[in-house]
Amino acid sequence: MTDTLEQTSTARSDIESWLGRLDAACRAGDAQGAAALFTEDSFWRDLIAFTWNLKTCEGRDEIAAMLSATLSSTQPTGWKVTDGEEPTSAEGVTEAWIEFETAVGRGRGQLRLKADDTGEQKAWTLLTTLYELTGFEEPQRSARPKGAEHGANKSRESWTEKREREARELGYETQPYVLIVGGGQGGIALGARLRQLGVPTIVVDKRARPGDQWRSRYKSLCLHDPVWYDHLPYIKFPDNWPVFAPKDKIADWLESYAKIMELNYWTNTEAKSASWDEARAEWTVTVERDGQPVVLKPKQLVLATGMSGKPNLPDFPGMDVFTGDQHHSSAHPGPDAYAGKKCVVVGSNNSAFDICGALWENGADVTMVQRSSTHIVRSDSLMEIGLGDLYSEEAVAAGMTTEKADLTFASLPYRIMHLFQIPAYEAMAERDKDFYDRLEKSGFEHDWGDDGSGLFMKYLRRGSGYYIDVGAADLVANGDVKLVKGQVDHLTEKSVVLEDGTELEADLVVYATGYGSMNGWVADLISPEAADKVGKVWGLGSDTTKDPGPWEGEQRNMWKPTQVEALWMHGGNLHQSRHYSLYLALQLKARAEGIPTPVYGLQEVHHTS
Image 1 (cartoon, rainbow, N blue to C red):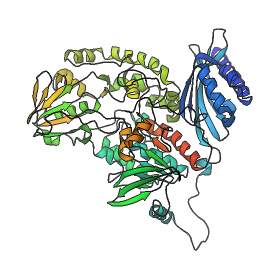
Image 2 (cartoon, rainbow, N blue to C red):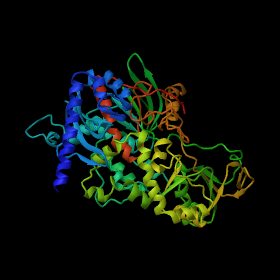
Image 3 (spheres, rainbow, N blue to C red):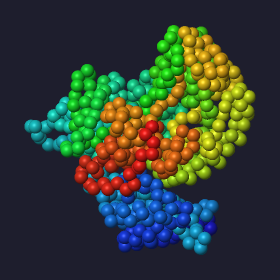
Image 4 (tube, rainbow, N blue to C red):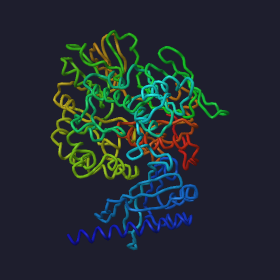
C-alpha cells in the first residue's frame, strides 16, 4: 500500500511539474520552449482546441510550428490534473487526465510522460480537445431549461405550439444555419449536438422515416460492434439493450431519438443540387420535399451520407443479358425469395458473409466468390481482447465511462496505433488457431492486414477488407457455403463466369463489392470539380493496400474543414458518429457565433478518389 501511494504521489508530482512548465512556456509565447518539453518521438493530437482542425503534430519541430501559429489566439491557461482522476505509472509511462482553458472554451485531454535519455520526464503523447465554448455552454444540469412557464400570460405558447411553429417556418420563412444531408446515425448525432447548442439545423433524408437506412438492409443484419461502443450522444442505450442490436431495433431507436431530441428532420426529402455563393457566403441547395422543390440557403453544408460513399456496382460484360436477379449488397432484400435457388455472392467481406449466411439458412445453394484476401476476426475474441478494456460490461464496472473510453482511444496517435493493435491480433490468432487452420484448409485466402495489425487498422485505413465473424465463416470453412477464388470475367443468361473459365450457375447474383469515396456524393450534389477539390475521403495515407500515401496523420476530410469552404464530411460507425460529432458541432457553433476559427494545417489533397 505504501509503495502504491508513493507511486501515485510521484506520478502526480511529475505530471503537475510538467504542466506547470508547459503553462509557463505558453504564457510566454515560447513555442520552442514548449516543444522542448516533448520527447523526440512525441505526438500532440489536437481536436480543435488549438488548431480548429483535427491535427496530429509529430515530433518537436511540428509541435513548435503549430504552437508558433496558434498560441497567440488560443491563449491556453489553467492546466491541471482532472479532479478525481489520479495519475498512474506503469512500464515507464506516466499517464494523466488533464483539463485546461483557452481564449474561447474549455478543454480536456490525456497526457503520457516518459523519461528521456537524461532521465527527465517529457511528454510522449498529448491529446487536447475542446469540449465546450465559453458563454455558449449546452443547457445541461443546473442550466437545463425550465420547461414550464409559470404565471399568467395571455400570449402563452405551449411547447407543442413552439415546435409546430419552428417546423413550419424553418426552411421557408427562416433559413437553417446548417443543412445536414443524410439522416442516418451520423446526421442524427450531429443534429442532436447542434440542437443542444442552439444552431438552427435541418437534417434531410430521402427515406420515409428516420432509421430507414437500417430497415432497408437485409433482414439478418445486426450490429457487429457491441452496445458499449455504440451509444449515441446524450441518451445511452438501456442496460438491457442487446449486445449486438438487430437492424430494425437500431432503426426504431434512431427514429425515437430524432423525435425525443427534437430534430428538424425532413423525411422524403432528396438533395438535388448545391452551389456556393461567394458574395453572400452561403449555399444554395435545392431539395425535393414530398415531391415539391424547396430552396434552402444554409451557411454550412454537411454531407452525412455514410463514410462508405456510393455503392461500387461493377460493370461486368453480360450483366445486361443475365436473366436472374442481381443487385448490390446495399440493395439486398434478404433471403426469403431464394430458398432452393442457386446464389452467387461476389465478395468476401462483412456484407458478403452476412448475406451468404442468411441465404444458406434459408435453404439456398450459395457460392462465395473471393476476389482478394480478407481479414476475419471472431466476434467473441474481438470483444474480449480487442475492446474489453474500454467497451464492455467489465469496463463499466471498473469505472470506465463511454466518454473516457472515447478519449482514451483518441489519445493514441494513428502513427503508432498499429503497434498497440498487433499484439492483440497475435493473441486472437493463437486463441482461435483451430478456426484459422480450418479456414485455410477450405482454401479461403486470409490475412491480418499489411503489418499484422488486424481489423481496426484496416477499417481506419481503407474501410474494407475484413469480416467480424458471427458464424458465417464456419459455413465457408465447413464447405456449407461453397468457395471459389478468382475474378469475374462475364455473365451469361444463367451464370457467372470467372477468368479461369469456371462457370457458376446462378438465379441470383449479389455484388458485395464495397463502396467508393464519399466525395462521389460531392460530385453528384455540387460538381466533379468540387469533388476533386475536396479529394479522397477516408484513410490515413499509411501506404498500405488501398490507402495510398503520403501520410496524412488523421482521417482524410472527416469532421474537419475541407478545401471547399463551408463543406463538411461527417459519418463513420456509431462510435465515430457519437465522438466526432462533438468537435464538428463546436466548429459549426463557433462560426455561427462569429468566434474566430483560424484553421491550422488545412489538409492538402493528394488523391481525388
